[in-house]
Length: 319
Image 1 (tube, rainbow, N blue to C red):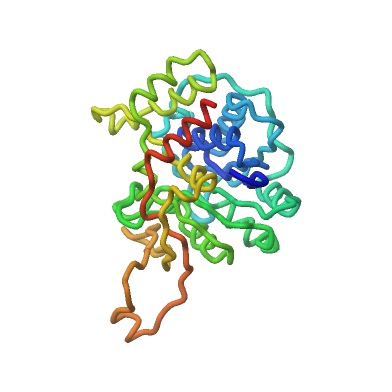
Image 2 (cartoon, one colour):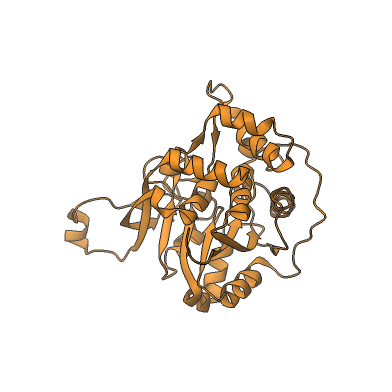
């Protein structure tokens, strides 16, 4: 890494893998984590704030401002992922609360303040439903002049997890995701297609869990946390999940992307929340007969160097 650190802001719903992302972002020398904003998603927004402050303690973070954001999506009710992340969003480890306190402004206000105050354009990394980001873009569109890129964890080219076709973060607030795509800044979609592939080997997970260093033990316990529905999985590897999106900012060369048209399905029914990624080499009958629709062009993650990102994450968090 050469030159000045990249100024980044993480917008998260701190569950297990958002915590892994924060541990990495705080400690990577090429990243300048300027703020963290919290939104309802994996758990309720107050618990997200609590979890975020705990993780920043374990990471040895400085005085990084943390703000509470939206308590529910723009239209839908909040729907947590407690069945994956535990009732507290952090694997129900019973971690004591932090003495840190969130700032006394809301997430959108903090986002605007930190983006416009940054001497270099900021990279936004949303690892959560996109409610805060949509509210920011609609309320203060002038922030886009100082946003370098938005690298969001969300969407899927192939198979969803919240539904057969929709990924959780986009499904949780599809309207917000649709607003993000119209931001007018470069966007990278770190979707399920690459998200699910980056797995830390079992031996590394065990080494971290056995550490007497609280940061490393937390990292190992987070990696070892399993979705109860998948507890029959014989390979106890640990998925980096959201942390892979932050790795892609620190080391973009490990992610293979292609600039493709993407839109979000907003219609009710089984397709709601799907990210429709157009990989066709040419227009089809729909466009020929009805005319082409305007669609956002997004750098869509299609392949990932798993070993490279695992090595990067371990080296940073353990270093």
